[in-house]
Length: 137
Length: 385
Image 1 (cartoon, each protein chain N blue to C red):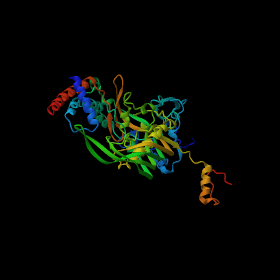
Image 2: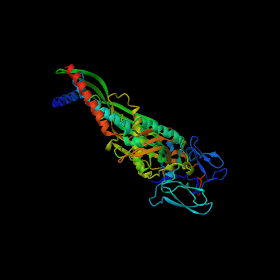
Image 3: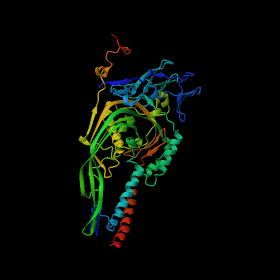
């Protein structure tokens, strides 16, 4: 009896995962285990609040400027049974991408680079007051 | 890399910190108004808001390199926690252990001596947010929170619950402003058709979709990310601790942070900063990328089947770091394995907590629900054939 129940639950789970939901009869066998596990998990979270945190990624003030976008069709999929893109992470901003994550820290401008930029902007030759603390010429 | 330091010490010194009107050192925070109050002449005043005073509100787009407010400067391991001050009133030598308190009373003349000068031990921040939620309010919020969670709570916790033991704690954080740009690349899919096919006696659903190459690039100016700067509190693994509770009561109105003055800490405790800017750069980059990805999510709504980012690049052009103390009412309970916190945001009153469970009782009732559900579901399944 237990084996039959286990096989029924397993078969039902596979069928549900594949989107075959027209026959809900076998699904009802999952009602009990799902309710028991669900009650345990929800009560645990209500008391321990182990899943609570500050959603800084959405609540921190930030401004986006100079947005550049690129969207180009590169392929067409026919007859997939997956409901969403494989490896979807567009709505999981906290997930880093392993080797796909890279960071560059730009060094602050040096006095030489500031002078060079100043020169290239065509201001060279104009007389300006030396900054405070500058020995002057 | 060279760092630019903004001096926020304002030449403050240790020792007697007197009321500007009468010269008394009997000063404390008047919770509710957020003002300092002299207990002798009742004069009230407040320190200046640091954003304006030290120019922390300048344009984030202008940030280049690393700018650090002096209260967030590097911690020297050799720096002592225990400082000896000479009382300017009577000349006695008074010891202040900055790991426990930032003020001490002279045992000879009863004057209060304050630690206001920035130390290389992380004890004095650039600014702080004074408590504005009164202690009685915090006790009521904690009591209400726990009362809603008593049925499955551990009976020892319920028996020993004493919300009047709540403590006002100033927790250390670093505020980060960041001038960055973010580049993302990946793939997105838009469904073009869905249909079912008969396979044996079952209907199986299929989907057609267009696959897009997706890229987003933008400049991202981030204002006041709040990062835990106590190494102990930064660890938020729920299996080892309940530090996530303290994190969950954010946000704080950090724009209102005022210049540090030890008198704000009178009657409260504080936890020292133990993490440096250099040690937090990895966390800062991760947070900036997370904010960037969250902002990018606003631009990919057309991809109904979702987006898979395969590359993300953060360019950090400039950062600005400021250290602050933020106010938290904290009730803690050690159950023999974990310290459970119930925390109240000392500015907004937001409350979160962890209540120790009686696992046996919860497992028993969950099992009963499982058995009843299985019987009911089984009858339904048999009835449907």
